[in-house]
Image (cartoon, rainbow, N blue to C red; front, top):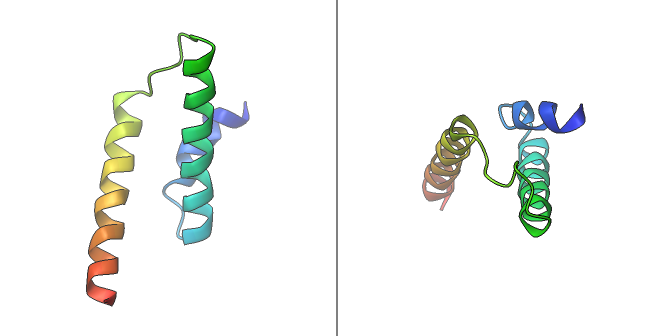
Length: 65
């Protein structure tokens, strides 16, 4: 139940919560790969969201520096 809600936290306004959600997703998929789970590959929609957030973060850091 909880893993289904974690990707939604990536859209949070709270930066710390977004970071923790991203790290949690990464750990879950690493574990899934280690046990050869059928869930070892993230859905395309999650990959698109993570890429979008990474780009936003890079732009923000660039402006801040």
